[in-house]
Length: 171
Image (cartoon, rainbow, N blue to C red; front, side):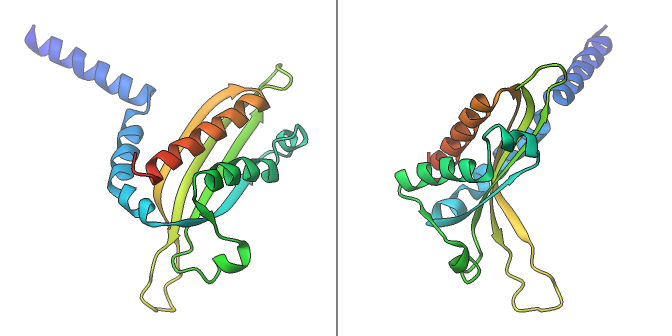
């Protein structure tokens, strides 16, 4: 009887972990905790925005409008923005990347299934070895999945930006 109970508990734990993607959330939480000091030391960021669906851009959620939401929030909090021309020369090239993937919901005009991801990246130092291509290392990340309209997606971008600012300020 005891073995059966243990097996049921383990199966339930696996199902819940897979269904709610608890391992990824735990991993991101630990990484964010570990790298929190790194993002706190970065005083300025380059903002990179990627939107994958031109249809949502036609509804007003453009790269420029997303960038404005993020830049306004960062500047209000005292976080400096690195312009494109200076970013190429900035050591480590710190970036705040915003990806918005949105697909129209079937049969629901103006409603999108979306995933928003905010990530802080910096260029890894290859110690001057030219044969090894440099890559960006993610040092902090947060994301959100949902299904809603453009206004709600904009609100989620604002909320995730606030999460970034809280982590950046040490909160």
